[in-house]
Length: 419
Image 1 (tube, rainbow, N blue to C red):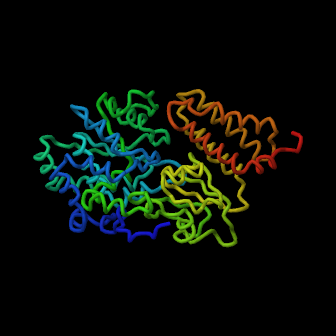
Image 2 (cartoon, rainbow, N blue to C red):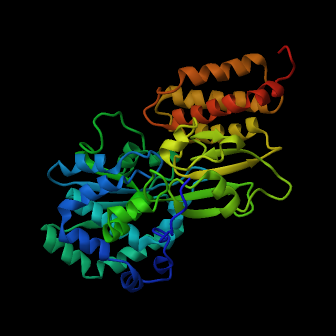
Image 3 (spheres, rainbow, N blue to C red):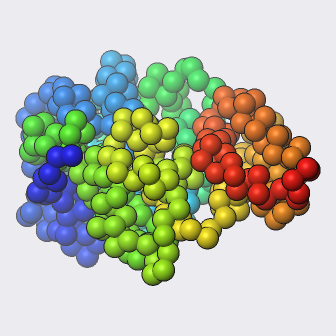
């Protein structure tokens, strides 16, 4: 494993935290990335591609691919900055919006320059009231500055910014559901194709990027591709903001080099498990992903390395679970969350998550039978891919992972050896 580089606190800079005004952001590092972007907008996309910037809202999808598709379109275009963060254990976007709103606005503006976008929507979960207030306050400062006029002179069009609270539903974070919500509708996910890059808000090309993804752009443009890639470990590039929660002594939000070992996050930064507790499992990337056990905590936390361990990095949310916690009950809590969050548009999702939740509750309370367990295993086979969005896949993924690692607990939870 490579030595950790000296990290420049890429996203969580003290100078841009709430209470520091726009002038303080500009005095430190703010604006220089946008200056570089205005000097040569044509190179932004190439830099994003060369830097291997990924979608940091969970997918890990190469950012430049979406950008290229939107940039190739003509006419009015939209950017949705997705801040609908709502999954248990995931809270890094809230911190970025509350403490670093100026870099988010600058990053969104850089993306707009690269893709010829005129409309920027900051789409934020209404329960994150501090984040909404911070972004609105920062936008007011931004619009009173010289930047909007400078951008208009450089591009020939006026970029329009607005904050729009989402519906507050978990499903509202899915990209096509976000489009529906921005249009004033209930956030039902759409069938794809067509994809948002071709047919998004009001039928116009729409780029949808996560808060963390956009927050990287001012620093990438200011410092360059080589600097950005050096922030990561091994073949990984940049940094990642990890949300650490669960049975650790020091839960919180940590910006670390992409590729930092999970063991470092848990024991160096999280300061280890609660007194008297031992690690049993880690839910990686939030509850819609998979489980790692102690034998895998040496894994570098980047998309490819985690995937090689039958898991997924997702949003970077790591939920530590200690020995003595029942995995069946814990998975049941998460699947219940998905069941209550299903929009009901796809019967297989609405009924499937509900049935999974009921089966897990029965097994977890000692009322389950062998038939119940067989039904759970069968659902993991027939449900994936049956919905319009990721919700049903996420619910199945965490269940399937728990069955893979902890089948003995499921077996022991049944009513008797022959039931």
